Length: 316
Picture 1 (cartoon, rainbow, N blue to C red):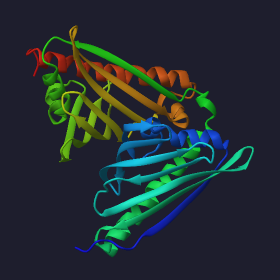
Picture 2: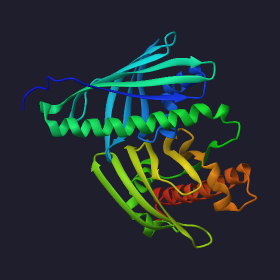
Picture 3: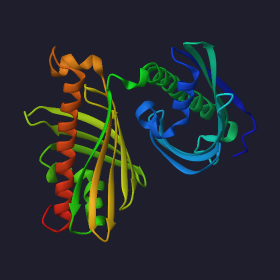
């Protein structure tokens, strides 16, 4: 197949009712991208020095999970972030671009998201696939950026992060295997009714799961999971329960001279408009925070306790 020669360019724009500096900081803070941007599953810093950094991203594109490493240059004075993929995944042969943040007035900001790309083989079908993915993801990212920036300091408490830990007396790698093998959870966990686990690429899983509540009700979620053997599993729910706008989390497996442990970390963005329908007309954001903390913490702690039992040889 011939080398791609044609460079294609796109631009997507949105106006945000927030100061430019606040918008720019959200773009810079890639640690918050999974909870802020719908396509982003996970981001890792590879290295950084001054205004330059390398990040590895896992994100959905046209229903597929893609990963790549990008170099970014942060211009804090001009409010710009340029990026360039080091090695792209087919059908992308090369891709880069720039976030440009511009002040409209004291309370409004224009954000321009530019992409330039080349398609494998200059194939028109590849070009169309890439343009469709860029258009879908850029629209979702810009709209999510607007919502996050216009939510002043999250004063309403819609975002919460919490964690729980269970000690392990057996081998940590066996506890990791228990969480990794989510396809077996219906036979191993009392709150899981059904799962469908797919792993189309090593360490990249999609998990559809039907969970039972204490009152007997069930709800279905769909997640992407990125697995780092024996150490870490991160996930993002693509299909969340009605009370949540976003839910990302991670299972952390650690071992030192004091022993082993599993920690479950959740970050949730609540859907304020859904609270009355789910919890009743008089329910508050505080009620929703407590409900989510209890429900997610209970299920993840149950999972970790069963993983610990499996590791010491007393579980399924």
